[in-house]
Amino acid sequence: MHLLIEKTIKEATEYFHNFFIHEYTKNTYLHSVDPAVKLIGTLVFILLSITTFNPERVLLTVLAVYFLAFNVGISLRLLVKRSSLFTIFSFIIVLPVSIYERNLEYALIFPLRVFSSISALQLFILTTKFNEAMYALKRLRVPKIMLDIVWLTYRYTVVMFRDLLDIMLAREARRMRKGSHLEMFRVGGKSLGLFFLRSFEKAEMIELAMASRGREVVYSGSYDRGYFYLVYVLAITGWWVML
Image 1 (tube, rainbow, N blue to C red):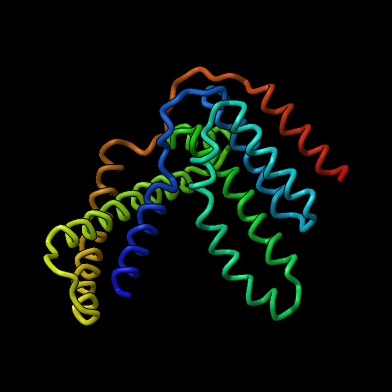
Image 2: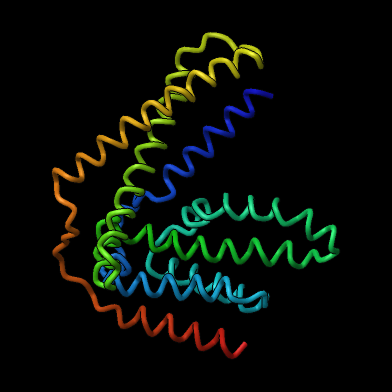
């Protein structure tokens, strides 16, 4: 049982570590679109997902996101993989309530809304580097202090999960036998303490690194104005309203 718990923790850590990582090397049309335009379009898709419980509207939003991903060459399998965990978790959370209230439709619609929102966000992450996303926020007049907070949170989160994965891999490499539940909790407590110590150290190092390199968000590059993308988003929005 404790091996299953350890494996679950490891898989969840890997998922959250990769959640905000831009790992798609293939350049597509969306990679060339102005990040500010993509950010606005992503927010529109998310709003279309969370502002309705109409199954047809939610399905339209999901299909619109995946149709766009398919046409620009993004792997649908990768997109589903990176969007599935939160969907499964939300289904587990709402299922008891839906059974108690005898409303099983809600148990299907709510996770579908989550899936649609996360898919839209992941499509943005897969086609936009983080410095480009920050540049988009800067262009949209987001206050500088908010940009600093987002920068620090992003860097710290990535480093934190990377350290947690390193600790778990090191623990697996040193383990010679299966061990008992008591040993798992004892070693797990030590690993957790080491993780917190590393987290405090890395937080200070990240802050010093940001201060030494400068906090100004600067990005130079030419982008497509994204007229096709805007027309597509507007068309989906109009269709959504008519349903």
